Image 1 (cartoon, rainbow, N blue to C red):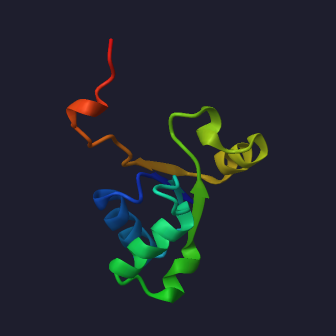
Image 2 (image 1 turned 135 degrees about the vertical axis):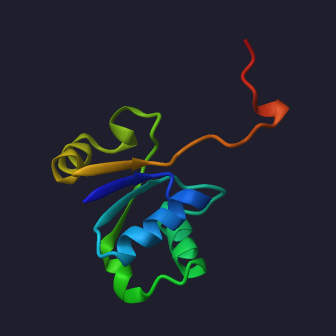
Length: 105
């Protein structure tokens, strides 16, 4: 299984679609946003990328956050994930450069 972070972003979504198109089992770590659960966000992206329903069985969506300990998952879920993944593709990033979002020192 491949763990993919940032799969709801432009690059990550395309990588996820490619990987499952190649028959890879992908675990996508995503967060909810603007009231949409991670699974809905991923589903919309897969629709937009025209990923066939038959391929979607190879993707597992975990709602979590990379900045949290254990990826924001329950300890048992985090441990089970660590045992199953063989590769990590890290695409998560902060791409907002708005002045109002800069941290104040």
